[in-house]
Image: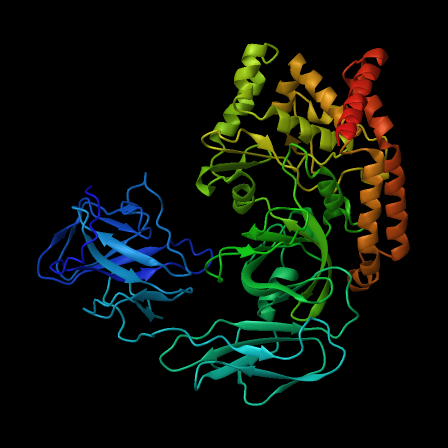
Length: 632
């Protein structure tokens, strides 16, 4: 293809960009599309023609080698562009589309504004204006609707006290910068429609209230929904997340959701810092999260950002100890299977493991309100999905394969993972040369740290195993740390789980099904790897999992939760009482204080290490730690 010219548009060419859809309804299964219209009397051969949303990459989307007939409206989508090129993806925030002919001439330009689900941008008839109109009635493959809008009504401004917490009633005022706009509002969390109450005079706010408002004007599309939550409660000591949504939808998610039923609905999300000052607000989809823990009345949920709800991601520093600030999904976790007891295991052991050579998550305690009603204490967690891998590894979503447990592909395909499992069983991994070939595809150090984390704290929940990689093997197969609720279960300092992770026949999970640990069992055949595992186990025991550090972080976690436990227990009865929770945390702390000596003795026995050899290894680790401390 010739380089694109900087000359003006080719006036003799009749092919125009007619209509563009960048967002469809969430989870509809339908993708973006661009409609071309042949407005002239002659057919146009699209061989070697291209579309792009990147001025520096005119060849981005190659068009099919077809003839566009006179008067034809031709829809271009992922099924029509060449599969080896990038998928059709148009930002819902709006961008500039360009059409190039086979000689590289710029044929047409269309500037589209921000789009919402059910709204397309395009032209009316033969208008070659470069700025698009908006259509609330998409017509792919057909002439555009005669009803169009030139833009959006200005989003309402809500005037009232700043901050989440209120102590006195007040009058709330709502306005829109669009002259003559009609402002509709609701007080039940739902998005206002033209049938909702019309704002005419200030609204008296004197109890927990969520106000949602939309402005409408003739000739314009409805504004975005603006939501504001006000609470008349004793201030919380942790951040507060407020969700607002259709009450029926919220009942569906938070009351009916189960491991077998996970609906998703749009909600407004407001995040407030511990002092009640606004942090960030956005729209997302909310869906139940988890398996066994969804049997509890207090359910975990995931907030999924999609273009169909507003933005595909949110940029905010939810976790002060992380460098990542951009998220496409985030989870509100109820405490998992530890909810009735200490209610901190997963979040505590995840935080304790941050910095190891295995993928853990950042997490912090928050409280949740749904449509102004207190919904309890939750852990705000990073969600280990496409956005997580992109943030930490710059991994493209289409290149990721994520496998749950034995063979279930969460992302991508399980074909290569099953091959790796077969190789782990059939290859002679005791041979260092063979082992080196295996290590080219499996991250053996990530496996070591994964095993140390789970065995050190006696995690016997074999249901929760996941491996992931990128298809080009820039990232080799590596495990994820997730759902650590069974760590130090029953507050037992003597838990011994070495054989569970190295069983040649797999290990039984809590539901009596088998989880296969072929990769770990295969690695264990190699003496060099076993030595690395033992040395690393001791290193972590006296550094990341040093007893003093473990207890310090544990005490800090308990102090964060303690002021919030009374309201959590009053709302859900889980834990059953403050006394029960305190007993559980005290017992867990005691087990943690004794764990290192016990698990190191288990390590020594399992691998048959002599006392003198083991003591020498421990001395070497301590010496290295002292040298690092002196260098600082």
